[in-house]
Image 1 (cartoon, rainbow, N blue to C red):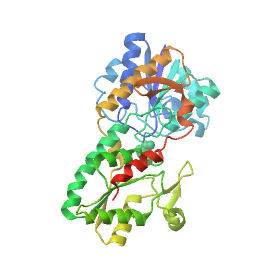
Image 2 (tube, helix red, strand yellow):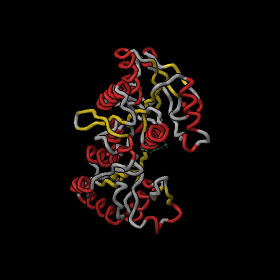
Image 3 (spheres, rainbow, N blue to C red):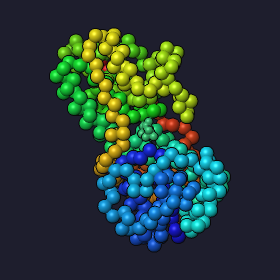
Image 4 (cartoon, protein in one colour):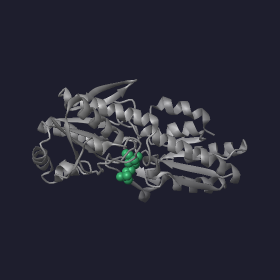
Length: 343
Ligand code: F6P
């Protein structure tokens, strides 16, 4: 048995831990051979491979990024993409493919299996934690840790200058990073894409925080939008591939609004790709490693079209389509629960 492995979409701490788990168990327990495909689906489309064996995965457990490289190439949007994948898998003598990725990468794996019978197993990843069918994705815990540390640091500088500090975190469609890091870091306002915010309300929370002699920290997810924002800010908003309306640079925009409406100095910190870089947390290494071990078991069992997922403390297999059919967004009750700390 020869197994191909690829990592697609935005990178995420823990990708290397999955690759290591897959290869270590596959070689040691089952005697499988492996080949790595470079840069997500670009590798199988272009036949770009790298050797993948025990020496190749030595020392990679704590390393961020992915030794296989990543891209957002989609073979269904590439001319003759699927044909090329079939040819290149045959040429590399690959019997099964493990695709580690988010919604787009897994969506391709599901279609390749369902429509073309290509034997794929999926492993879910995203720092956004917005994939259905798994309780957590690896990378999320690391991103929350990084954002929380940033919020902790911003508290002291906010207090020294009695300024409003707005922290923009990742999360285009789901506010999981904002909610978790905002709670962990003691933010005074948390704004998420799932619920449009009222700028006057945000300013009222900011003002009440100053009244209590504290400087406020506002955590805003990059996909958060003000109420009526699309009507009022026409030129500044755009639609993403899901048709969701986005205000690019929402953190910067919000700080200016707060300053203008409250008269208090406001600054913005955009954490951006720092949240995706560097070494994975212990939890993410644990989860990613277990995903890897269970993914190679799914290959051994010939259980294709499936994705490994965390349910409680168990790793289970679910149809890949379950994860990609809809995004897992923040439950309104969870957001409401956090509201006790606003203001
Ligand atoms: O999906 C993961 C993610 O990090 C999002 O949170 C973010 O909006 C997006 O990727 C950024 O993508 P890129 O690195 O391609 O700009």
